Length: 418
View 1 (spheres, rainbow, N blue to C red):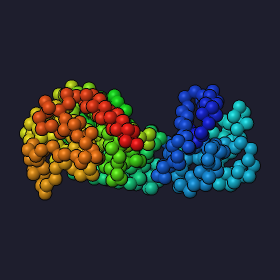
View 2 (view 1 turned 60 degrees about the vertical axis):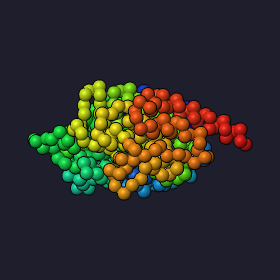
View 3 (view 1 turned 180 degrees about the vertical axis):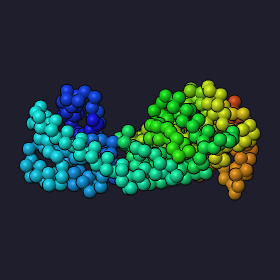
View 4 (view 1 turned 135 degrees about the vertical axis):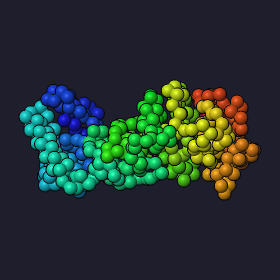
C-alpha cells in the first residue's frame, strides 16, 4: 500500500505513519506539505497511490477546498477526508465522493476499513483502465508502448529523441520520459542514437550528486529505448533568464553550476554540452544538470563521438571543442563563462550569422568587456573565458570558490554604497 498524505502538521503526519506501520509494516506514506509545496500539479492523478488523504485544515488552507478541485480530475485516486469535527465539511466531503476518516478513529477498526476500501477501489479502477482502449492509448509514446506510464503530452522533440510528460505508477510522480526516435537495429553504427542514449543513462547514474538529474527507470519497448527522469515544473535556466536576473542571482547560479560541474568532473565525466537549456531548476531553488547524451566518461573510457567530429552548441563551445581538439574539464568551465556573460547582459558574447563564424570568434575574438556596473565580475569572467585552457581555472571547485568570492565582494560593495 502507498498513500499520499496532504498534511502540514509534521506531528500528525508521524502519528498517522506510525499507525499505518502497525497495520501494514511494508506500507509507504508520502507526505505533501500544502504550504511549502503548494497544490498538486494539475496533470497529476496520483495513479501510483492507493489513496490520497486530505487533512481538514492547515494554516491558510482547507482540505475541502482541495477536495473540490481534485474530484474534478478524471481518474484521480480515491480521496480520504480526515475529519476533525466540522460536520458540515464532512457532509460535503462525503457528497463529493470522499471516504471519511475521523481523526479520533485512527486507533480503531474504522482506520483499516476505510483504507482497505480505498485500496480496493483503486485496484478495481486501475484494472479497468489498463484493459481499456483509453488506458492502452495513454501508455503509447509515439511508436513505443510503455506499461506503467500515462502519457500526458509531448514536451519537445529532437533529431534523436522525443520528450514526454508522463505519470509514473512506480515513482508516484510526474516524470519526463525520453524515447529514442530511431528503433534499434542489428547494424548499429558508432554514432547510433540508441547507443548514445543508453550510455547517457550509465554516465548519469554514476554521478552521485543532487546536482544531476535523478533517473527513475530505463528500458526498451517496441525496439525503442526509453529513459525516465525527474520532471522540473519550474523549467530550465533559459526560462529563468527571460526575466531579468540581478548580479547576485547570476553569480549564485554560476557558483551553483560550478559546484555541479565539480561533482560531474569528480566522477570522471565531461558534460560537453553545458548551456542554459541543460540546467534545470527545482522547486527549492537548487539546480540540476541534464542531458549527458554527448558526455565523455573518462573513467569508463566511453567516448561516443568520433575523433575529429564536433558536438555541442556553438554559442557555448570552448575554442578547443569548436575545433575538434582534445578537451578536458576546463572546456566545461568555458561554457560556464558564456552562461555567466549571458545571465548578466542578456546577450551571448559572440554572435554571427552562421555556426562556424561563432566558432571562429571563440578562438580569435577578444573576451568581451562588461559594462562598468558589472566591473567587479570582469576578472572571474575573463578567467572562465580564457582562450587557452591552461589560463582558465584549474578545476570547477576553484571556479566555484572564485565565483563565491566575487559574490561576497559584490555584496560588500553594494552594502557600502547604501
